[in-house]
Image (cartoon, rainbow over all chains, first blue to last red):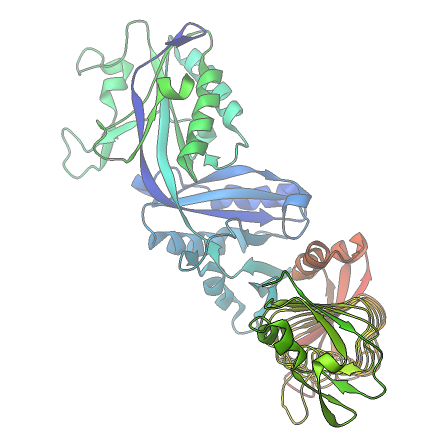
Length: 298
Length: 254
């Protein structure tokens, strides 16, 4: 299979089940909602080093938010259900609570107990006993007094089984072509529902393999089969004529959202200078979600 | 089982008709004949609901009541779930000590809506009452939890002695509103005569108010002005003669 002269390799991306929450942040202006979201999702590229993965899902118009203000939707993922509330409490408390004018709402309201995380309930104690709650439409909100006025946070947030580690690799003739293709792919996947791209600008230059050939304490090390500079000294998978590889990693709420985003991203990445699109997997032994490139693009 | 139980008043009662038996929890398990046999008190004398209301439908937690109900009292007393829609005004003690569910009145309501029963220390402990008209004295008095909304004027002593919960008054809140309030909020979109024992603390945009007002618009179709959703409110803390943990929020403009 090829698209616009770019080969789509007969392989699949292997992804994992993660736990996901959707956080809706609103602000007096879209700028302040985004400021909080950017801080919240900072240093959240990979569970390998950050213990969580997070990203901005999309901007929200006034009519889409509970308080009628502009907002941002964030997806937040961890590997297990215990660490999701821990990470959310720490990060929301240090980023959204601190950010002027913001309020924080659950973006998965249909999730029933027991998969509801008592995040706002934990954050309320910042109010030092001066906090108060309001029940509106069956949901409890906490009002925390702050120097600016008041911070409003929903008491619980829904948690779903999500998908982490969807991916595809862009194999290009040179670094400029790889970057341009990656940027086009990210542009095509921006604001799609149910998906985030947790890495800087949505792009990874340092794809990794599990473990290390040399350092036993390393959880992940460079993906040497796809490093063009190591073509001569490793079992390289870099085809002739390819001099740069960039990876797009996708996390999401469900497999179909990941598939839809991969379809849009791969199609956009098939442009001049790109030789092939492939994907990273572990032989199908580690992750239950397999995204076959040719099936997705058929 | 019907979509709703419809109770149509045959003729306006001559005396006060205490119809505390009209609760969705109760009607949800009863057939039409059993509903008609429910006890009421008319002018101090025992009677049956069917003596005054035509009953249509059965076994539903949604009740629709039609007719001139100004003398019908105690509708929804102690209800914990379900929904009552009243196509007109109602008498006193609407939703007294209710614990859950919704009451939507398309007209005025008498005294003590959402309040406490005789001798009880607290009023409603949950649920929502929407009065699309004026409310009599002591609306929301001693309520412990829940929401009362009055789109017209609130009577004397609106939210008097509230323990917690929220009262929203679109019109003018009567004298003594919030007096002896421990916790809870009175959101005044119109004029309010606040007690001297409330202390002004600041003017700001309380972030829960837009959430609340937008909910009322979405759930009940109430016409809420944008200026109230986005506007600023003066916050008065009180009642300082009590715990002082409650508030009156008075809208003051964009």
